[in-house]
Image (tube, rainbow, N blue to C red; front, side, top):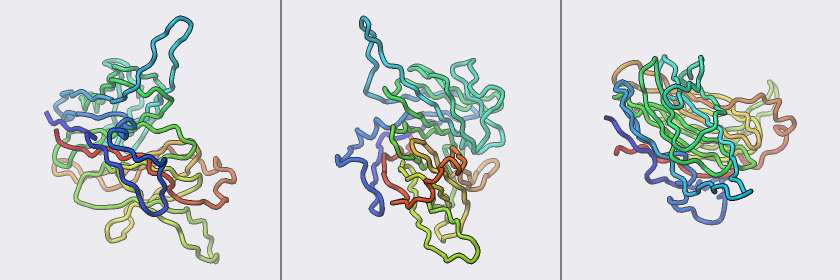
Amino acid sequence: WSEVCLGPDVLSQMRRSRLRPLCETTMAPRGLKALTFAACAFSAAEAGQVNKVQLRHSAHKAAPTGFVTSLEFKHQLRVCNAYPNTVPMDIYRGASERLTGESPLPYKDCRDFEAPLVAGDKLEFKMGGADAGTFSISDLPNNDAVLLLVIHRHDALSTAVAFESHVFAGLATAQVAVIDTYKGKEHSVAKIMDLSLKKEGDKAEPVRSEELRYSSVVAVNPGEYEVVLESDSGEERARTKLVALKRQSYVVMRTGVESMSGSSFPQELVVYPNFDPASLHSAAARPLASLAAVVLAAFGAVLAC
């Protein structure tokens, strides 16, 4: 079995540029763990052997007493397939409930599922009928939340899978989770910048740009942006748009693999969800105070168990 664990030591990094802390209290690693959706362990895709993954959360729902009943929370599951393969991914809850229906989830795609989750649920991932891995849920947050789960390749040598996960906090701002799932020797950084709407003949204006650190979650003001993937030498590798709306949760992923066995896939950027700029109405025309406003929490690093 090839087993990995995500996030036994969650790291918190505060940028110095135009970022400000979410609150004045310093958050210790123990506190940050409450924001993570899961710590996980996975098996090799070709072996079809399953290792359990546990969610950590300290709160528990109150049992009904008399006329007092427990609250019901809405948990929206968002799954992103960052596993480089031409075969799409099927997702099952348990052995028989096929969440993806007749449309498996392709590589570089994300999908939201409204199926209510409960503690004890197991999400089975399969490719072409072969088992890829299992995600077991031991507990869920006691609040409405978007639960992000990204399946990707563990390394460039084997075909083992791994996960990144996060619970998006209920904020009024747009939140962006930045995840690096690329496996290979190439180094690239993701940057967010103002969308250039300059027409020919217009006076050039400086475009604000900030780095999006991998394994972090940031909040951005509403507006239209571009996310660019740049090499260490400044060469552009990929570019895509991000339309940030209030109260929305986004994921920005670097995908691809420089495989040591099997097919390789180039570096690419994935942004989800994608909205029509018209949804902003007049918000894009107003001055923006800052591209990135808040660092929420860092994702756990992938460590060998």
